Length: 201
Image 1 (spheres, rainbow, N blue to C red):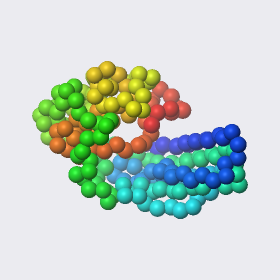
Image 2: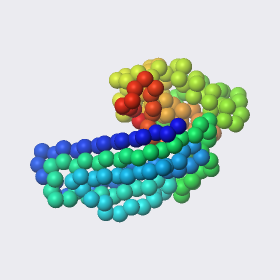
Image 3: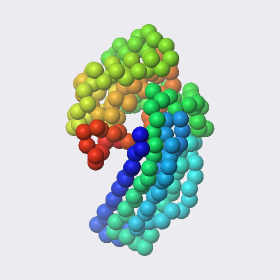
């Protein structure tokens, strides 16, 4: 599927900004599931300082404010062609060891509710076990905006029975780690079929 992406972020300030630095991770990577055909990042009110690849393998751009602006606009846009690979994107890349993705965090600590999901993962093998886990999460945690916050834990979202993409990801990570599998959060865009302008990532 060919996707055209236009992502604009605008910061407005009460007065001119004398100095500011921001790190951007807005450039997708080509892998087994997607091919980046074209990509560009335009900056108004700022300028690129340095570009590097971080420890996760993300292309990272450091920008600074320029000319004492009262607004900084970042527009990332391009075309990406996706391929359905059932969620498999290839081997782990980056400098971070896999064991780091085994430890719980404040948002991904598995409580009694999430621990009930562990037998699902251990009851199947290969990618099927994770597809079953995703389906179980979708069944038990209805996608509903406004029911959770950025600080809502995986356990709280699972017990409440509603949440958004972030909550689904945190529950998936918590259950996977509790079952002994390394898992991490990867940001991206969610394409909803009932609209052209997407609001979720």
